[in-house]
Amino acid sequence: VPVDGSHWLSMREVLDILGQKGHEVVVVAPEVSMHIKPSKNFVMKRYSGPLSNLEEMKRDFQAFLYSLFEEGSFLERFLKVYKHMKRLGNLAVSSCEHLLQN
Image 1 (cartoon, rainbow, N blue to C red):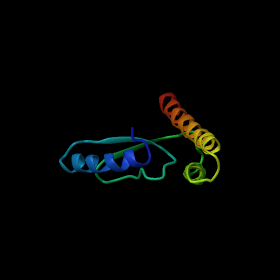
Image 2 (cartoon, rainbow, N blue to C red):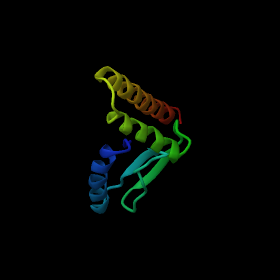
Image 3 (tube, helix red, strand yellow):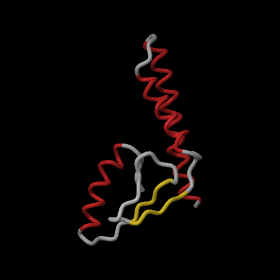
Image 4 (cartoon, helix red, strand yellow):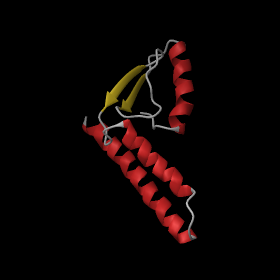
């Protein structure tokens, strides 16, 4: 069960090699994903998650990235980043709940 982003990008190479060597690899991923795409080297199983579309996911991620570089006092910037980290964390937990209930 991969996590979208750098975790998946690192895992993808290993899965491709395992598939090429004849191993049967099954990837379980949310329907909405920025980077997790099907491959001939593994079987893809999708499940519904908390996000309804890719644009919503991109918007949340971009808002987090922009908050890292906003101006303001340390406390203001810390609180903004914390708010976005909390949102992304809640989305990850919700995605896990959707997977377990599917």
